[in-house]
Length: 632
Image 1 (cartoon, rainbow, N blue to C red):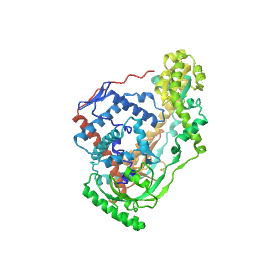
Image 2: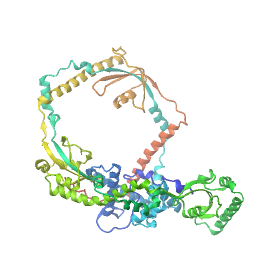
Image 3: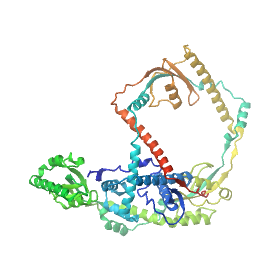
Image 4: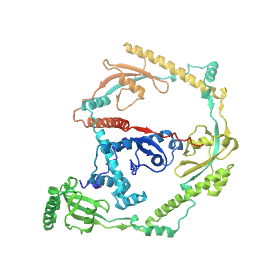
C-alpha cells in the first residue's frame, strides 16, 4: 500500500544475504550483453562473464572489506585465491538466478520497484528517501533512472526466487518442542575435585629426564629470528597536517550549499486513499474520482470528520487506523503526484482529489515545519575539517608517489622521506619472524618484506606497502638476530616445571579414576563434595568437555557419576543428583522462535542446493586463472 513507499526498508535485503558475498547497490549489471575488451572468466549457458565484470566486482568487494575492517586488512587476504573464487561464485550465482527468473517469466510491478528504490539506504537523507540524492548518485554512476530501475528489477526478481525457495522449508512444532526441551533440561550436580597441585611436590624430574625432553623436542626450544625496526607511515592524517584551508574557502562552501546545513521544509498530512489500478479503464477511474469528489465536498463542510472518514473509507490499511495520518515527511519521500499536491496546499485545506499509481488521494496538510539554516559559526569547524579531508584525499596520490619513490631511491635510510614529508620515524622493540603487525599496522606482506634477506643483511628500506585504505608503510631493520636454539641451561627450569605439572596431572587422574570406579560400584569416596549447582544444557556453566560428559551420562539411575581431566591438570568427578525436564505448552513462544531459527537453517541449505541445481542446469564453465603471487 501507499505507506510502504516510505516505510519498507527490508525488500531485497534478507534472503539475498544467503548469497556468498552481498554486492553493492549497483551490483547487478546487464547480464546477457557481451562486453568489450578482455577475456572471460566463466560461461553460463554460453553467455560470458567478462574479466572486466569480474575485476569490478572484486574491487568492490575489496573496498567493502577495507571499510568493514576500518582499512586494516591484510593485502594477502584481499589478493587471495579464496576471495577471487568467492567473488566469481557470486557472479555465477547471480547469473543463473537471473536466467531462471527470465525462464520463469517473473514480473516486477511498478509499485514493487518504487517501494524497493525508496527503501534503499543509498538514497536516504536524514532517514528519508531523497529524490535529489537519487538523481545525483545515478548521474555519478553514469546511469539514467531507466537503466537503474532495470537493474533493481533484476534484484527484486532474484529476491522473489530466494524467498520462494526459503519459505518452502517446514519445521514440525514437535521437533522444535523436543529440541527446546532438551536445551532447557537441567541437571543438579556436585563436584569432587582432585587437584594436580597436591602431587606436584612428589614429582621430581631427574637431569636425565630433562635432557631427554630437551633433545626430543628441539623445535619447542628454538627462538625464531627477530629484529628491531624503524618505520614511517603516510596516511590521511599525515597528509591533512600539510593541508590548510582558508576562511574564504570555508565561507564559500557554506554559501554555495546552504540547504545542506539546514532542515528542509517538512509537512504532516493525512489522506484517504481510494484504490485504483494505474491502468484501470476510464469508466472505473471516473467512478472512483466521483466518489472522491463527494468525500471532498463532505469534508469541506465539516473538516473535523476527516479522521473518522479516513478510518471508515480509506483503503490504505497502514494509515486508516490512525485517521489517515502519515506523519511528517520532506520532499522526495512520497510519490510525485502526492508530494506536489501536499506541498502546494495550505495548512488545514482539504485539497482536490489527486491520482497516483496507488489510487486517488484526498489530502489534508495538518502541520508545516518551515526550513531552517544553521548559522555559519555553528558549522564552520565541520566544513573546514571536510575541506581539509577532501584536499588531503586529492593530495594523497601525489604524496604517495613521492613517498614510494623516496624510500626506494634512498633505500639506506628513512630520514629523507621523513624530512621531505614531515613524517615521524617510529621504532619497535624486538619483533619475531611470524609476527602479524608492526606497531598497529597488520600486514603479512609488510612483515615478509621486513624479514627479506636484502632488508636484513643490508639494512635497506622495504618498498612502500599499502596496509589499509590510503595508508602506506615503509620499514627498515635496525638489528637482527637469526633463529637459534636456546641452551639447555636457559630452559632447564621451564622443562622441569612442565614435567612436574604433567606428572602431577597424571597422578591426579589416577586417583580420580580410581575413586570414580569405586563410586560406580556403590562404595563411599573420600573427599568433600562441592555445593550443589544446577546446569542447563543450553546455558553452559562448565567447559565444553565437562558439559558434554554431564549431559551425556545416563539418568536412569541416580546419582550418576562421570569424571574427566579439566583444563589446568586437575581431575574432576561430577555427581548427577537430579534431572529436571520442562513441560512446554503448545503456545510457548520459545517453540516458535526455535522453529524460526531452524527454518532459517533449512532455507540456507535449500537455497544452496537450489543454486547447485541451477548451476548444473545452465552449464557453468569456470575459466578463471589463478592470481599472480603478490610481491614481497
